[in-house]
Image 1 (cartoon, rainbow, N blue to C red):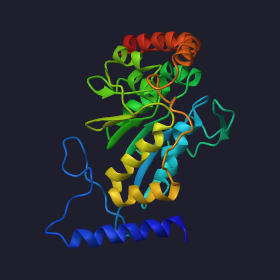
Image 2: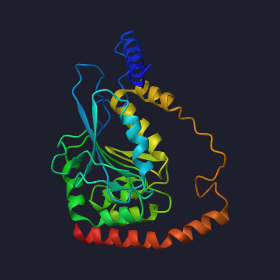
Image 3: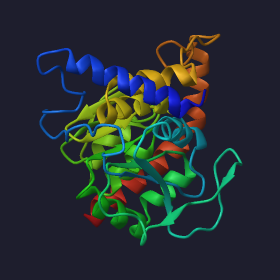
Length: 272
């Protein structure tokens, strides 16, 4: 059985459960301030567009986790967006092709998304063309989102001023320079801004977005298809749980990059 068939079964089950209630419960995302209603699945639903920024040197897993989740949703078209359609190489050496350009990207978006990285991210924090594209699409996007240091790019575009946000643990200190309120969390929602923490949080983030767009049954089905049930061999995924010596060594290695990110943030503030 194909994964889309599994999702259709889940959607049908959710619809039946709703019919059996007196009005039922709306899919997550309906009725909250700054949260557009979830769109039902099925042939009658209009196509929704998700724009996922790609750029040289971004972290592939930041993108692939949520993109895999989004690809399981009906009536959704995912666009990998960059200035050109030329191949891009991620920070782990994987090469991919953008599917559309800034100019051709749809203006009405359900989700605008930015992945993170290190050197590549700092570069686009200084790129006026990238920042102008994000600022323009954010005006009409239902959700403005990021994973990892992608939040720094959103911040550089002026899109996190007055919002709570998170990022990779090593870079969260930069967020206040961009007008955001720093939150130490796996992911954080503030009105229509949804930001994820470091790298692997992209799956958690993606499932949350899926639930807001298509309801919990669709998100849970996607989670089951991916067999997403984390049980890591080590409890070293946060500075609080990792051995202190490892945290100190890694923090020292990352310190020059944090300094560069702070400089880029200060340049972005001057641009505003």
